[in-house]
Image 1 (cartoon, each protein chain N blue to C red):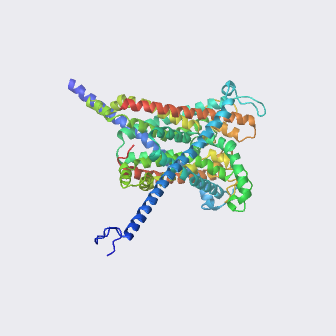
Image 2 (cartoon, each protein chain N blue to C red):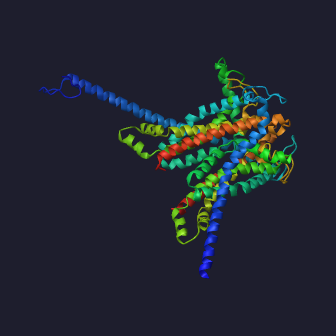
Image 3 (cartoon, rainbow over the protein chains, first blue to last red):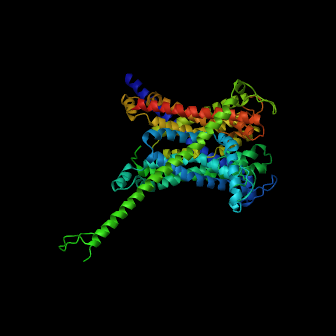
Length: 314
Length: 311
């Protein structure tokens, strides 16, 4: 009798075990399922625009709210502002990563890392607010000064408005520095200490030893940069608030422009025409696919370094 | 026989002149070379320090401006009154504050259980290919633009219901929350020492009991911390609310009506030309930044305390 009870209890336990494992697995599987559903739903909703415009959607600048929708100015603005952001953010982020991983005394590392993480945690609408009221006036003065001297170069042509491509690039750079810096720092820390020690033992200076570590961390740092690029491409509020929201394709840094995320933010809630909505969703779908691929790529690159590092020092 | 770098051995009592010269030149060169390398080393150290300064200056600029402009805007009225019509001084953001609390609560109901359960799977059962893929997708998901998640919630909830609603906004925020909760919780659960699990299993406990009664309680500080961090993160999100929860000039706590929220209100106020509304926007920004600051600081202490218990 007792033995029977024991057996029943055991099989109950193993059933409970399987139930528990099954339910955690179910919730974990929800994540990839959600992602795939997102792509499918957006593709479905954007279908009228995809079918109507085909590849013209990417190359046309016509956006007349009736029967012509082309996303080129938005794509241009997104790519240009993100390129600027990477250009500005990469050297700074690398410096921060090297300082935090290799140079800073241990006592300073934690508080400094905390500050950098805090930069990543500030809501983007606050960045936008700061961009409008603090950064844009500064940029405007800088533009006036630079335009008076180098205005003949197309890059610096146009009136100094403050709200435009340059401000967007700077705000984006500030926002992606923590991403690139903290991932690069982690990658550097995953490079085994023995490599630096070997270089130092051969008489290398600290910087020469760091260069050895950097060359080993290269693919991870590229991954970190791509991650930052993904952030910059998809950033909405801060860009919407400072880029000027004018459809234009210009090389000038001073010119107001538009971005893919900004047009969705500005027009979506007031769009009633089904084709207009589908076009906006197609812009969103493009963003989703681009950032999806970039994120996948960067994570794989970062993982490779972390795996190769094996027993990294922490 | 010409061996410039070795002393001549042909019996002379003084080393020959060419040898001395070449040695001198070589050592001079190597000293210079070493100096140059040291200089480069110093320069790089300086440059990386400057980089940190460059990165931190905007942070302090934001914190100072938010403090200087936001703090004076905060008074009792800010938290207890509705916005006044444009042109009138005073008023507060009561509807936006209540709206934000409701939206974030809704998001937590969706995001926390899914995220925590997924994290349990990843840390306790997750070996092999499937777990790797799920982990990769979680990372990818946490990098997706939040506005895209807004479109997703629009298609899923706003479209079928035919109007903007708090429910749609809460779902958008909840989806955004999932990867954040999953990643932080997984890390926290992993910090629980393996020996605790082994002790439980050795006592004959089934695995699910070990997880529920031993591992999770041991990791509870970390899990709460992760939950707070993700709530703070999601509370500042604006883009996914623009066309899901929309905005509402009036007080509302209905799930099926559009609802105001702090971030959206900051955005709309900041882009108007009225100084009085700018003042309120800075006040709202102060509240958001404080929330982020406090949860991040708290996290540091809680996690540090957790570490000490574990070791």
